Length: 62
Image (cartoon, rainbow, N blue to C red; front, side):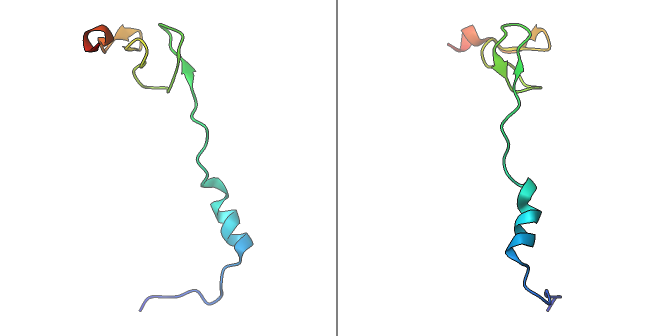
């Protein structure tokens, strides 16, 4: 049997530890090609460009 806590953790101490665990709002950046809002370091879902060059051909998919 492993070590066990000697005293119960209070709700305040437990909640202070979990203060930074909340999921935040995603940070969005503007696409340099079509100016749509997108997640950083990902291919733009609107135009298919990444770092100034076309990676996905969205017209062919449709």
